[in-house]
Image 1 (cartoon, one colour):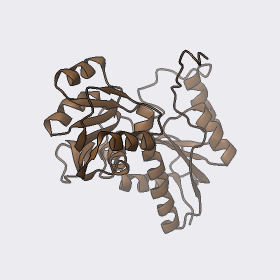
Image 2: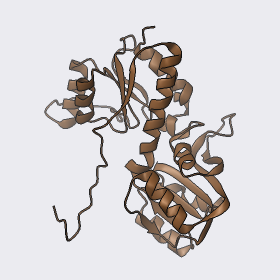
Image 3: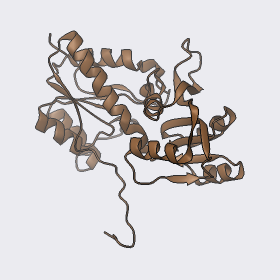
Length: 275
C-alpha cells in the first residue's frame, strides 16, 4: 500500500493527538505536500541542515522532528541564513517536515512517560493534567514511584544510563532512599513546585533556572537537570518503533529510521581538555 504524508500525519495523530498541543505551539505538517508519496521517514529531535542532508543520503523524503522547523511566523525567508538554507534545501529536495512537539509532550504515552518508564517508575500520572480532557492520562510531565524504594546510588545510575550522560547537575540533596520521582522531558523548570506539592522527593527535568535551583535548596527539595536533549532523546526511539509497527500493519513497505547524525549540542570542556 502506498503511504502518503497525510497517512503518516494520521498515524501520528493517533499516537499523539495534535489537539493536545499548547496554543502557542506549531505542530503537524510544516513543510510539504500532504499527498506526496513517502519513500522513507527519518526521525530526530531537531530540524537541522545536517538532518536534511542525512535524509537525502538515505533516500527519505519525510522528516519528523519533536521541535518544529517553523515555530513563529516568518516575516521573510532569507536563504543566506542557516534557517533560510534549511527551508530552501527541504523544498528543493521535496522533503516534507512534520512537527510533533507539545502534543507528544501531553499524549498518554508521552515524552515524559517514556522517560519515566525507562527509569522504572510505576503508578504514573501526569504532573500537569490536560485541562478539560476526558482522559486522566494526558498532560505534561509524569510522577511515579518505586516499590520498594531504591537507593540514591541506584537511582543516579538509572538516570545516567538512560540519559547517556557521565554526570548531571543537582540542586539540593539527593535523598538516601527514593520512592516518588517526578520527571518532565525538556524544559520544565516552572513545574518544580508542582512536583514537590504532589509528593515527589526528586524532580528530573532540564533547563532549570538559577532561581528554581535556589528555591529547591531553600525547600529541602532535590532537582536534577538532565539537559533538554538527553531527557527528550528516548522519545525519538519510541516514535520510530510505533511508526514502524504502523508501517507493517498498513503494509506501507517503507523504512522508518532514527537519525544517526544528531548529537547532544553541548560538549564538556575542562582544564585538561580546553578545546
